[in-house]
Length: 256
Ligand code: SF4
Ligand code: SF4
Image 1 (cartoon, rainbow, N blue to C red):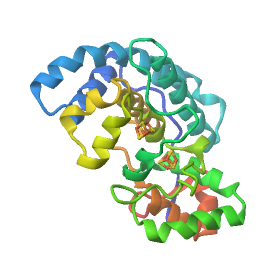
Image 2 (image 1 turned 180 degrees about the vertical axis):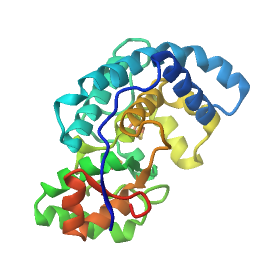
Image 3 (image 1 turned 45 degrees about the vertical axis):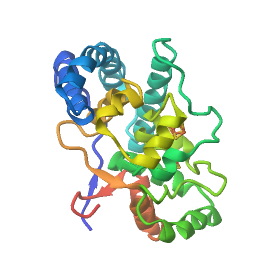
């Protein structure tokens, strides 16, 4: 299997204003089904985009030279994304999230398709490597009955108590997903995704944080994503592969 090193988070190639416009357009195209929705939400997104990009792309790009260990760099960027989300929520502009602070609601872990970039997979691999054999076996044991994460299944890292086994290493999608209404989450689980309501359903900054993060870890190209349970199954039965991922080496795109 051909191996390549994961590229380090890269500083910005575009000007902040250009990048902000690009990210805002991408969010609106994905999340708003109508011209009216786009017209309504554009100013809100544009207002937040500059601040988020300044923190996650410009500032972190300038700081990224201090550590060459990729999983550590990506982990630091994930933690920065956490702080950014927290600060946005604390800006008093938005209703408080309905998500309980100390767990107790894992509906999203049981119904969402969980995808992660190859760089985030390296962070997960590093944490998996630190688990005991029985802990790894427990995850491996539940995977065959789950298949891929998504509606009707669940993320393989969700344990029997409804807690995330690798919470500190969870991907950006899990860190940014917040809802101001449990009822809206229940409706989503019951009725499925409604793209036209997505911007209302969550907060206007979650996608901005996600896309800024992905711009940093996979600049320029279309992000390369893996499905969580498929990734877990592949590395939990392959000690050599797990060690390679954990050290910041990943298979070439066609093999991953
Ligand atoms: S996003 Fe919804 S389902 Fe997920 S923890 Fe928050 S309230 Fe629960
Ligand atoms: S990685 Fe953790 S937080 Fe994310 S879906 Fe899986 S169990 Fe939930």
